[in-house]
Length: 233
Ligand code: C5P
View 1 (cartoon, helix red, strand yellow):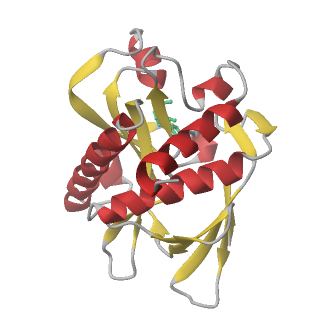
View 2: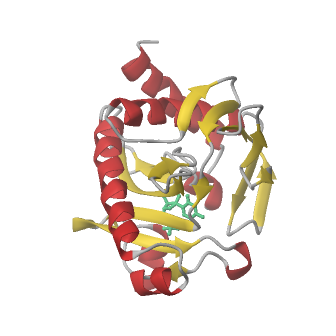
């Protein structure tokens, strides 16, 4: 049905369900930096599956149905809303760059930002007025997206703190069900979040973006620690 940078989406016999296959491809700078990293797809699928199971357990409605193999998961089919919803607890990444600020400064209250999912435009930052003008979402839906993003953030902060990682920021995508209801979709992994350990080392895709080393052992540790904590493995 769809080939993305990190995942392929396949239809199934059931028109309400799709299969997401996580790929070994790593990209940064909107695809300008690209590499095959063996094992990354399996790690991100397993990490996302575990996290979405925990979110479902906390009453957050998501597209996740079940993990079906190391690299694949079964999801409810949704129409993806073309927004990257970013929540920030500490300055980092594009925020630090835009305002020439050090990374790691804590916001008094978390920030929620929207980026327009559009590769040709390089996913530009957009505000609520732009979202409405482009008819991506209504006022009411914008409020729902922000509220849900913060609710997800509260669960994620607690979940990662249990494996001694500080959640700096993360990106979510949401989708609409046929009845218009908005639920959480896509992926949550070290590819889509910034996680710092007690010494402020990056435990996320910044290792790849900034050429700081091999992400595989780092992502493996995140998976192992999550499985030990939440699945008793
Ligand atoms: O680059 P920036 O600081 O805006 O990223 C904020 C958060 O959103 C980071 O956790 C990053 O991994 C995530 N992100 C993403 N996909 C993008 C852009 C950002 O997952 N296309």
